[in-house]
Image 1 (cartoon, helix red, strand yellow):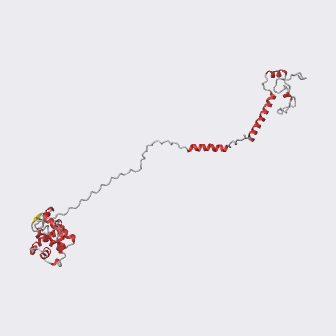
Image 2: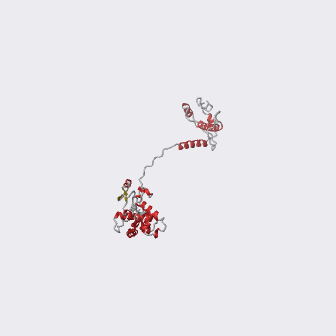
Image 3: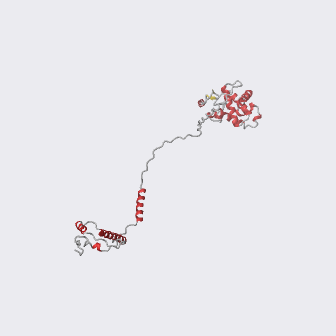
Length: 293
């Protein structure tokens, strides 16, 4: 007990109950110079009954002490580092690591959703499109049929066709008109303008023919003999070949164009009846003129 009749607080946390009141605090207001009134005995006794109750002086002291401790811990944590360890990564490094993780996740393969098929909408055109029909293919032209010449000079169609073959072969060789007349007149005398086969040469019967003769081995329109070197049986049975064989010999006779028809024909054929060719000259001329047109 003090002189003023107050009791010491033996159960207080900070020693005597009035020690905090006697000590000058730096946080007290300096606006008034009057001393702070002391608490009453009842107040002090209440503090004994509730030692955990807040006290004005001690509260201020605890706040100040806690603030100082916090500042000390912050300073100490910034200065010191744990022994044997590495410093924590800087914020920029941590952000870079996170960016790398994000980049790695973006580089992973991802399935892109398949877009739903869209139905194309036809846009109306300004001008209608004209549809062109394909041009029909031109029909192949039919080959012109050989002109059928009506028989003249008392000949039938087979005779007229054979005369036409003689004229055609002579023109291919470039033989003049006089040579064509001589060739037709000679065929009139030798075969009457029919293509003959020979009964002596059964082989000749295998080829197209219009009559059969028995004059040795003579065949064809000009009664040419294979044994005399005129050609083979198959060749001599063709009117074109037989005609060219005759004309090839005729054009080699000197002055044949100025000779009488019977003499020119005899020079080629060497017949037993040399004068017989002359009787067919007028008919041969009419036939050649009809064919040449």
